[in-house]
Amino acid sequence: MSLVKTLITSTALAAAMLTAAAPAQAQTRIALVVKSLGNGFFEAAAAGARDAAEEIGDVEIIYTGPTEPTAEAQIEVINTLIAQQVDAIAISANDPDAVVPALQRAMDRGITVISWDSGVAPEGREMHLNPSSNELIGDTIIRLAADHLPDGGQVAILSATATATNQNIWIEEAQKVLPNYEGIELVDIVYGDDLSDKSYREAQGLIQSYPDLDAIIAPTTVGIVAAAQAVTDAGKIGEINVTGLALPSEMAGHIASGASESFAIWNPIDLGYSATYIAHALATGAATAEPGSTIGIGHVGEVTIGEDGQAAMAEPFTYDASNIDQFKTIF
Image: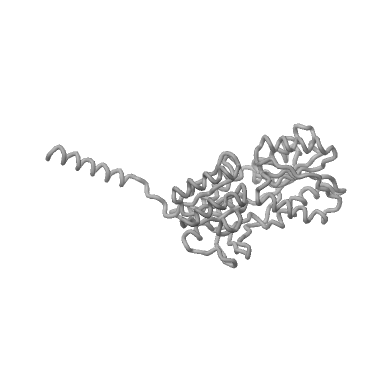
């Protein structure tokens, strides 16, 4: 055999071996796009997404997001996913409108797009999965404060970004139910941008600006931890109660110290799990996002899409000293 023929044969054999050794690409690739990486809530959601992928089979989860919670950074992530030709994008948006053009480009290329947790404007997605009903969440975060203020008192809200869809809706719903809680006065709303250091500073500002403040309500897992630490550092435990939406693993110490009497959250693992089931069903044509459509979400049950293209997963659950130890090692 000539040298040239030997080289050709060897090269072809090597190429065949490399092709055989390369792992097969999953039939369905779903990108779970979060507001920012390094957030315990979203990491728990990613774990749920991977659980769903394993149950469904032949599904790859691409867990991704920016390092800073901005719309501009999320748009870069979306553009990268379009170039990778993923099958579906499930996004928790930093801004409901700014990401729309990028998501429209994704849909134009045949990529299924849903939002979850923090929504996208309807023209930028096929449907949105709320973790619970917005009305119920709004009422819950006010009730958590009012339950420990029988004579009423001053409360303030520490939110995430000023453009976060879910935060703004929950705050609107909370303001609607304020008249139902006699003596509860909302004195301010501030924004920590879902950054620990800024949220801490905003909580400090509330403590200094309102000497009679009785509660800080933070409907964000980053903000509530920062606020609890600010109250602790200010020596205000027992005077200012921190409540809102949080992860048991991150708040167990603050429940024990008394900085927080109680808080609520849905299971973020189930939220990522449910979003994955929905994205897969829509991407494979097993379901549609038409109003009235029902989509199975594994062990969580099923959701029905409303006229507004939205569905709700479950009611939030309240955690306090009586049950926190049961959940603090789970999420």
